[in-house]
Amino acid sequence: MAILPFAAWRFMQGQWLVGLVDLAIVVGMILLGAYGYLKGSPRLVTILLTLIYTAGMLTVVAMRGSEALFWAYPTAVACYFMVRTFEAASVSCFALVVVGTLVADSVSPVVLSSFIVTYILVCLFAYLFSTKMREDRYRLEQKATIDPLTGANNRRALDDEIERIVSSVSRNHHSAALLLFDIDHFKQINDQFGHAVGDTFLKEFVRFLRPTIRKNERLFRYGGEEFVVLVEGGLEEAGYLAEQVRSLLEDSQLIPGHTVTVSIGVAELGMLESSREWMKRADDALYRAKRSGRNRVCLAEASKSWESQVLDAVE
Image (cartoon, helix red, strand yellow):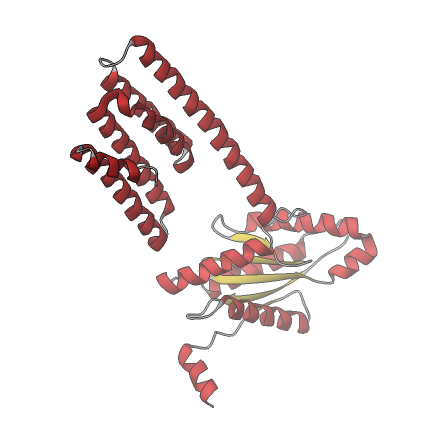
């Protein structure tokens, strides 16, 4: 929107070459924006956008000289909000050297020095502001997705991650499984030792779980004393992990002098299965584990295929 009017004005003034450069920048940004929207590749798009408008600015400066110096400032600012800090600093430093070289013979030393100083100041303020903005966004994301008591990911983060996994599995046909933990008789812990001890136990339980899961497996607090671990793998692998956790917890005493056990339901994501159906099968498996005596692992039945669901609906 900012560049297009200048492109039109260049054409009306007969400056066809510069007008074509401006138009090429606009078209390139529109195409990259459409590509990013359709393909969901923001990282690649931001890098290419940064390169396009920086190269366009340098081209216009090379063609128009000091007349186009003002475009260096918004280009520099945009870099710090589009790409990573080191990349933005590298691009802006490169642009400063090139622009300074291109206009050195056409402006006075005072004007050139003023441009260099103001350009550096603009880059510095853009760096400070973008860094602060990223830090604030990170803190807000942490507050929105982290359970404040245990430090595990919260229910909101779980819902987002499950939807992402369901979408990914349907496209790439790899395996994923869900472990649903419920701490046995947790109410008795609160009644016997107090809620402060119960809260401490939940924190210790999360610390206990973290070393037992791999880096690519994520831990979530699902409810009061219910936790979820998402596993990249099939039902057998997830069941082995669940049994390992159950056995280790049974042999541990997170509350001194008191053994606490856990019941676990395990479900592998089926093809064409929704996130709600996946979670429901894990919850049913957990219910069977609790109903059959607790302190055990129950594997969910395989999800029905699409054909089976159609037949059931017909019947």
